[in-house]
Amino acid sequence: MREKKQALGIMKKLSVIVITKNEEENIRACLESVRQADEIVVVDAESTDRTRAICHEFTDKIYIRAWDGFAAQKQFALDQATHEWVLSLDADERVRPELWQEILILLKGGTDFDGFRIARRSYFMGKWMRYGGWYPGYQVRLFRRNRTGLSSARVHEGFLVEGRIGTLTQDLDHFSHPTLFHSLEKLNRYSTLEALDRLDRKRVRPSHFITHPLSAFLHKFIVQRAFLDGFYGFLLSWISALVKMALYMKIWYYQQLPAETLQQRQKEMV
Image (cartoon, rainbow, N blue to C red; front, side, top):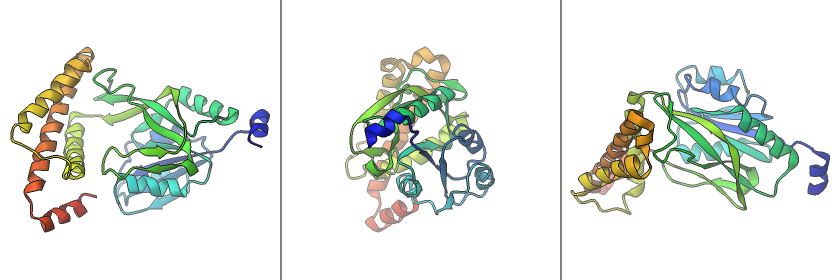
């Protein structure tokens, strides 16, 4: 039956899933890039801006759900999807036209793969960062719904596909750091989440506050050649160093807390 459908060129239907929280500046462009999808599912974490109103211009499948962490929100979104193939996007991502065409060709022609990695063109203060380890930055984003679940990490969660994973040739656009202030805010939140994930795996010494940030800067700026992105690469390398410094300071801080206080902090930072 599968071979017969492929021979007839029957297009497989596609669900797109997106999680949101106060994303009125990003969500329109995101959904516009996939408006031709057969189904768009949005899981909104009780936004207080115009996010949901904008989403209603593209879909009626909008679910309001209190924030329960990245992985939990995305798993809920995945559970609401109804089609065989699912494309997961973040609100600050856009599907480039050439990527959309590649996906359509794939869905029409059929494939033996159960998931696909997609490269992301990540932008830092408006500049596409080609170096510093940011590109291609492959992530599994297109997959068969019934073969996929989520990892349980608080941050840098990922889709886990049972089966073969291929790689698409075209890219997503990723506008994750529009301003320096946004980068610093993201640094603070993400370093906290990662610190909570690593509490039981890492014992911090005072020297780590110096050695790990310095190592992170040199690795990104020299080894990953961020210097080829000019001054933006320099700034990005220093932000990477700040992330490491904040991470190890927070791990150390949390490890000093009484168990009851730590448990409360962990609940607050789902």
